[in-house]
Length: 74
Image 1 (spheres, one colour):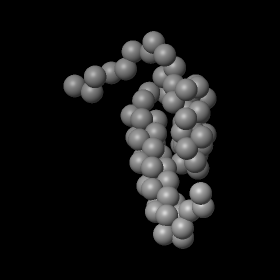
Image 2: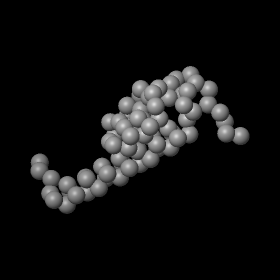
Image 3: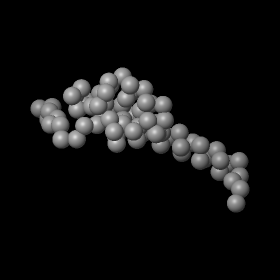
């Protein structure tokens, strides 16, 4: 089944919106997380997280250290 031009346009709009939300959440997490809770430099993860969804997924899977105590912010 081929997509119509209108369906393709909607698909692209949704994909771009999803990418924007995922990138924003990734950047927010990187900025709020201490350096010792991230594997590698924050600058690299910010770049990868903002380029595409694969970079964001890599950060969430590989870039965050598990078991690191985060401050509560209070």
